[in-house]
Image 1 (cartoon, rainbow, N blue to C red):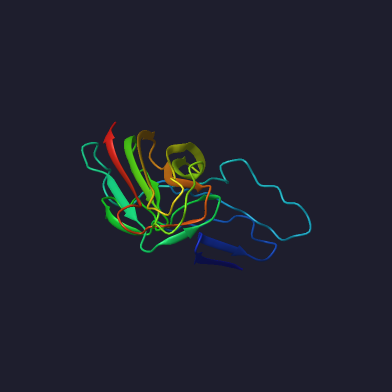
Image 2 (cartoon, one colour; image 1 turned 90 degrees about the vertical axis):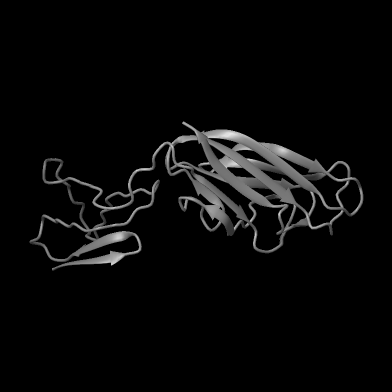
Length: 212
């Protein structure tokens, strides 16, 4: 017997019995730009099975519907801020930038990760500010950087040290980065003092495509 059902991962095929040796399945799966798809096979028998490498084994994929390709002249931009103050310890952290100011191509995730919908040079601007309740000594502070595809690209794009008293601290940074379609960037921060980040205009992450 064979059953086909849709799961969160896509289409799932279950085969039972010894006589059925060929499996063929087709269906529709929605993909965002940058997402990936592959065939995954699993058997639960005690003996190993050999998969044929001739024309009987293949994977075919075709785009059948969706938005038209993004033109090079289109404006691609997104900006997010925090919806509430957040407290951070002495470590690397990622602000929960979950409130969109704008997002032209729905490229920014709910956690503040930007996925490039089209290749090009992107301008990146960011800011991190404290709420003024922590004391930063003159030798310690916090910094902001950029993470690309899950790896640190720039660890200290900007850094702010304290003055030894309770005060509002803010650091601002900007840069331009080339991204291929599907690549990701996010705001990466670290601090030498436990503090609370402000959810006002002082903490944001903005990305805009500025060239090819």
